[in-house]
Length: 150
Image 1 (cartoon, rainbow, N blue to C red):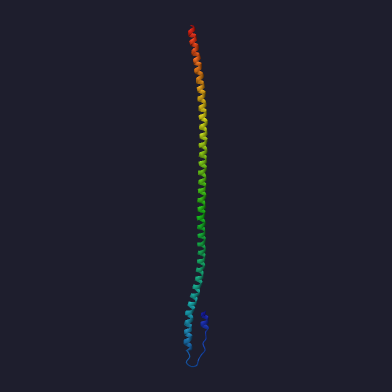
Image 2 (image 1 turned 120 degrees about the vertical axis):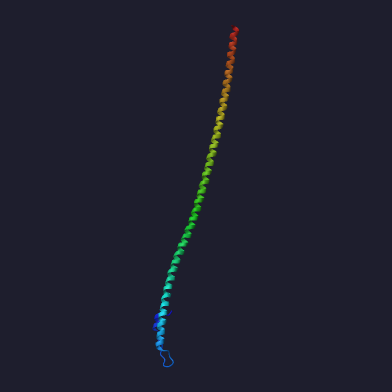
């Protein structure tokens, strides 16, 4: 690319006849140098700005990628926590069911034992009742015998 300094230092060979006016060419080159210097400087600044913006863009792309990865990791972690909580809840429910079944079985066993005890007590009562009845009958017979003798 031609620099403003190249334009400023450009020299043309002089012709004797039908040549350009040196003064007009120099004036034109001076004007061209000024305009080209401005454009060259602006172009350089814009290139620098583009480079800076590209670096910023890359930086923000990196941040975006990091945020996306973080979001995915957070979603996965949330799913993992949810699954673990569900497993724990299922385990608690299963343990509660097991405990309830065990307690129900224990109560059924206790009921069976109490029924057996009740049956035993009824049998003892029936035996006692029969003994008492027998005793009362024998006593009644004794009283009748005593009354017959008198």
